[in-house]
Image (cartoon, rainbow, N blue to C red; front, top):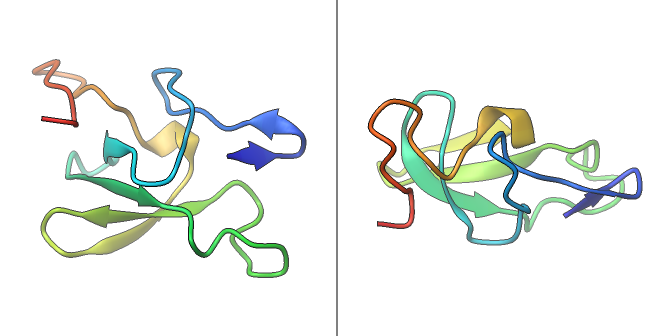
Length: 78
């Protein structure tokens, strides 16, 4: 995902792409949804949705998601 000409990355340095599995800041596992990230959508400022495995949807940015759990070190893609 590009924002201001820069590639957006997660807190642990992984490039943000559609359906990337992540842990959000609540430590809920889910996947990134970039479908709302279009010019003039209000999301185009580096924010995107994370759809959690619990069925919720949260507005996040790269600093708020990671692909590796900060305590257990479990990867989100498992």
